[in-house]
Image (cartoon, rainbow, N blue to C red; front, side):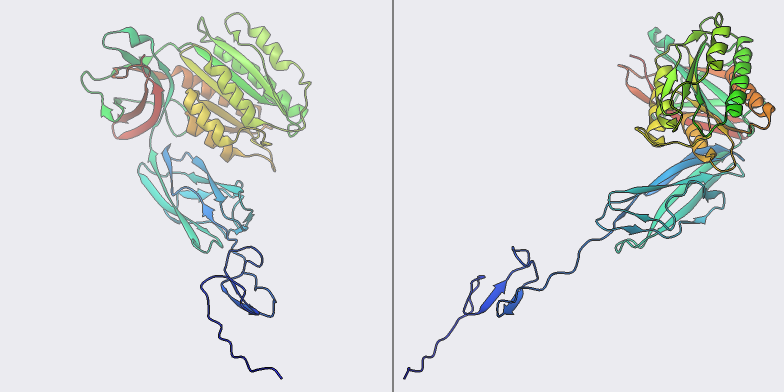
Length: 447
């Protein structure tokens, strides 16, 4: 009845419907499958997930110079910048045995890191000799593109611990302009080193200062001092421990009075959830006022501990003063409840403000973090100590060491090429019959 009709269908180069055949392209609306054909209107097959973890961290860590048998530390941050969970294996080291991963602060090994999140691990160096050290940190993970990420570690051991405690610009009006550095030279115990014939060299922006050579003078009278004493009153410290801290801090005030300078001043900052500093009181006339401030009951919220935020504020508190020496002393167990600033934020801020932070870790069996406190001190130019509340002499001795450091210094004066208040990079070295020390820093030059 019907005529036989022969019809030819040509394949077109567009995703048009032709009879019952549909050509679909990947990425178009609807099924989102790969390019192909489907019959009978059944739709396309979904693509497999493309979510993947991506590990990210710095390629190298330089732990700088560390006095022999001392320990330096840096906190390494490992980030997941991918779109799936990053499964980390056990972090390990290859190379010089003087490097160590601190197990107490390692939040990365065998952990899972969510996308856009991070973990941290403290890398430590304890040199046993005056030499350079290297190692490789290996970080295994499920990142398909980087199964084992490596980080190059380096550091140097020195016999002398050379640090800067201040930069003085009173010579900037001279012709030629001069910068003055106050430096301390300590041994491996943190005490002033017994030097016989120290030779200092100074580099400004990589150029050695030689014509004329820097003038080096031992300081026989302590320079004027501004100090903020930061005291932890969080719930992790008992009332007896707080009393121990107060009694010994009053003894420190007495030790400063024995070498008091006219403009010396002290501020007491107590903290827990928030921080509460006193004004700076002149040491020459306000000893009892300071002791009363130390003894005053802490009446604020003590449920958490904002160590890094409080010390950050203490750095600002101290940096605003005008004395030649400006330091912060932090007494805490090192257990921080994060708020605004991280430890890295605090370290960078203290370095920028040229405020050394001396730390005293109050030791507890289960919640002391001396590695973090040590990292803060060493990277800002301070000293790190630990003390047990069961031994009153511990903290008294530590305060005595800090007093000795502040009174045993060298003054270095050199002609600077800095102008306009530009930042200068300083590298200072000391060699005492083969015993070596070095520090690097930046400073605001002459305007």
